[in-house]
Length: 468
Ligand code: UDX
Image (tube, rainbow, N blue to C red):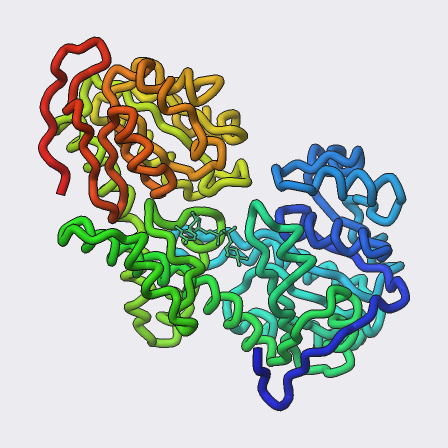
């Protein structure tokens, strides 16, 4: 990656273990704290929720994240990571405090900065001179500069450095430990160097910019990825209409290094705690400056439509309506590798199917407990085979690896009708056709089995309208 003249791709060896406080034990704070503690740094994790504190203190992560349990147990047993509720006490022993508190969306889409501002006020009052305040939370452009101005009114020379996080759920430890780039934004070079030395022991490319520049790198990255996903989903929707195969089209496009194949998987669209929130917050921020960021509004609208299209495909696949039909829903988490249901397409899809009178039986390897309160009218199965038993249609919502290698020859005699609607294009259509299934994807040509549309007991099921 070529960097601008004032940028540097440097290797920063782990410095002496300057102790660090990390505020907020969510995905970003907990993973960042654990990874830094694993390099030998002394980390105090500040968390206001007692239940989360107690779990972390016992080496048990309050979130599902591959590899985190082992790492957390190691760093809590060694004492490198300690968890506390007392930020004021921590500020006596650290000169660097990382803010990783949540900035959830307000009803109008703006980021809720109350938690961040509350912590900043405590730091302003209790931090020692020359403490560096690192903003790792995702915040609207201008937040770091505003906090710096408010801290400048104290006598303690406190420095605000933005250092956005780019980890993905499900591979958070890998993304923190092997980040593509390390972005620091601030006004004080020495403070920025301290952040690079302390938080970047993984020696990656460093981009130096202003506070606001770092904030825009974060929002711009997430918004661009979300827009890219909505774009390939629109191409997939066109593939459905003109009979092309999105797998081939996306590959043909993605081999151009300017486009690249990453984040080009068509399907149900994006969910999670970041893309939907950050796209809305960036659009709000632009609007406050008088800029109509039309592309972001379109990305959101396309994304919301994908869930509706999927339900329409399910209805069409079973002959036009799902009332009284049994739908097996495979996957609830917003993506594989996590139990996170925030903005997960599964929730809207399951509730809509129930509204339409379907009987929905769901499975997910890890997210079912979290889902029960959000989809109360849905039944839950202990495994995917129980979920599909007697189903009129199998709807794949999350591309968990275990769904890609199910025993479809066995399933063929368990379902009531052999129909699969694949929201993540993760099942092999030819494999399904071999076992007498109809297959419908998202931008993939439908494959209708030679056995037609008969239910397993031989009675002719309602013949479907052919899905476009
Ligand atoms: C995202 C950003 O990738 C990460 O850099 C940022 O720090 C947080 O937000 P995350 O939301 O955890 O990370 O997951 P990601 O793997 O990016 O997927 C986001 C959503 O897009 C998921 O719902 C996923 O299913 C969807 N997606 C992703 C697609 O629909 N197609 C793709 O090709 C990739």
